[in-house]
Image (cartoon, rainbow, N blue to C red):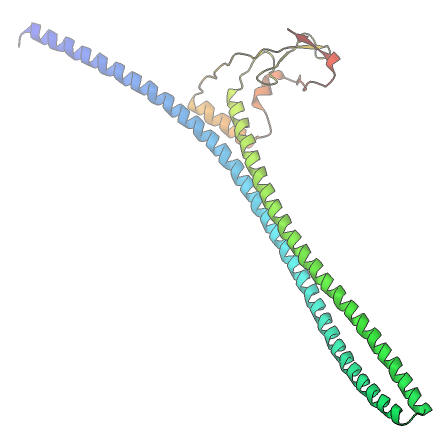
Length: 281
C-alpha cells in the first residue's frame, strides 16, 4: 500500500471517529436530560405516595373507630329491644289474663242478672255492684295495658328510626371523608407543583397576579404592583444535590427551604388595613 492511500485511510478513520464522538455526545446529553426528568418525577411520586399512605391510614383508623361505635350501638340497641320485647310479652300475657277474667265476670253478671229476674234481694244487688266495680277495674286495667302497649310500640319505632339515622350518618361521614381525601390530594398535588416553580428572588411573591415589594424598612408602608412576574425556569440540579435535598425535605417536611436566605426577617402576610400599603399602577 502506498503512503497516499494510507494517509487517506487515516483521514477517513479520523472523520468517522469524530462523527461517532459527536453522535455519542448528543445522545448522552439527551439521555442525561431524560434521566434528570425521570428522577424529578420519581421524587414527586414518592412524596405523593407518602401523603396518600398517611391519608389511607387515617381513613382506616376512622373506619375502625366508626365500626366499633356502630357495634356498641347495635349491642345497646339489641339489649333495649330485648327488654322491650320481654315487657311487651308480659303485658300481652297480663292483657290475656284480664280478658279472661273479664269474660268470666261477664258470664257471672249474666247469670246474676238472670237470677235477679227470678229473685230480687239485697244480697244479689250487692254482689252485682261488686261485680260491676270489678268489671270497671278490669276495664281500667285493660285501658292502661293498651296505653303501655302503644308506648312500647312507639319506643320500638323510635329505636328503628334512630338506627336508620345512624346508618345515614355513617354514609354521610364516609362520603365526607372521601370528598375530603380527594380535596386534600388535589391540594397536595397543587402544592407540589408550586414548589417546583419557586425560585429565589429579591422580593417575595404572594401569587401569580400580585407582587409585593419591600421599599424601605420592615416597619414602613409597603407598595405592590399588579403585574405578573415572568416565569423563570429552574435550573436542573445534579443527582447528588437532588437526592440530598430530597432527603432533607423528607426529614424536615415542615420547613421551607426557599426562605433560608431571608435570615431573621420573615415577611408576614399583608394585613386587611389598606392604609398600610399603597398601590403602584
